[in-house]
Length: 250
Image (tube, rainbow, N blue to C red; front, side):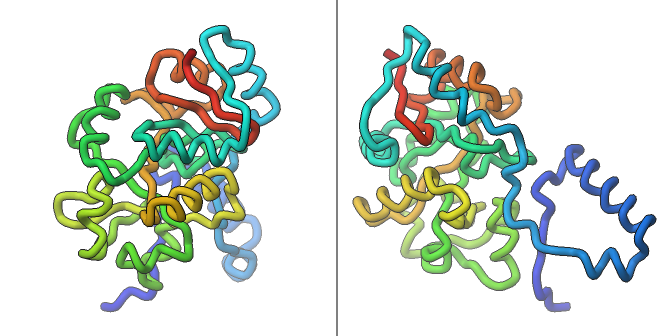
């Protein structure tokens, strides 16, 4: 039976129970007709705490951390092009297990060895693959995106084929079977995350970057500024970029 569209709730684990409980309560209170009439699409899951007013002070006041003056997007992009891996820390944290650009680690997809080196730094298993993120305008030319999987791909919850002409150019995000689990990004929803990718694409011709969660294996995704600072000082990433600046371990 053909599928018109598929959607996977972004918090697809135990954290999604809160969503189900809320929906069930609304259904019981309002009835099915009202419940269906008031449905709307989920645009994003940037629903957590926003620490933009604290993160820069936390990092700048740390003796072991150096602040880089200049455009955060330009500096971060240049560092990624140099082969460095950095964390994006901006706005409200994502709801669910997928990092979607608020608490993400980014790196170039062109070098397959980054998987081993970054997994070691994050104490992850070697079989854990990295996912790519791509701007809306580039999604279909890199990945097998269709009306069936497009919406789910905004939340990095579905795999699809990588078009053959791109597989050798972005090996760090391609699975052994030629698939990937992309995140399609609306740049307006995360200008910092999207701006870095756009500048990287324009400079290199590669329209994707690695996006993996900002955490050590079996630890929660970094949330508070103090957790971000510790990850930088411990050498888990080479830099942290916020809306205001880029920071490295001094």
